[in-house]
Length: 119
Image (cartoon, rainbow, N blue to C red; front, top):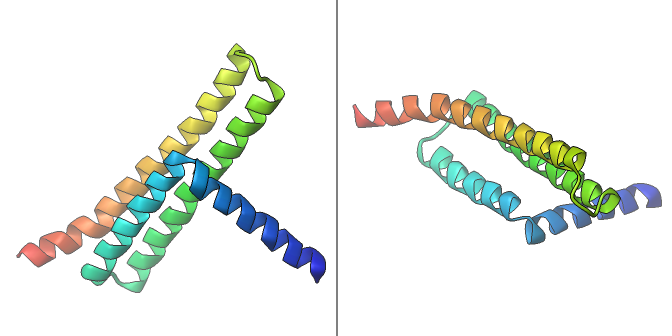
C-alpha cells in the first residue's frame, strides 16, 4: 500500500511540475477552464461532456509526454544535435495533432449548441 501511495505522490509531483514550469501546459489548462465554462453555459449533454473531457485528457497527456521527452533529450544530449532537434519536433508535432483534433471536436460540439441558441 505504501508503494501505491508513493506512486501517487510522484505523479502529483509531476503534475505540479508541469503546471508550475511549462507555459504550454498552462495555456492548455486555461483553454480547458474556458471550455468547461462554455460547456456549463451551453448545457452540454453526457456524450458531449465525454468528448470534451476526453479531449482535455488527450491534449494534457500529449503535452506532458512532450515535456518529458524534451527534458530527456536535453539531459541526454545537452548540446545542439540534429537528431535531438528532430525528436523534439516530432513530440511537439504530436501535441499539435492532438490539439487540432480537440479543436475540431470542440467545434462540432459547441457550434451546434451556439447555432441552436442563436435561433
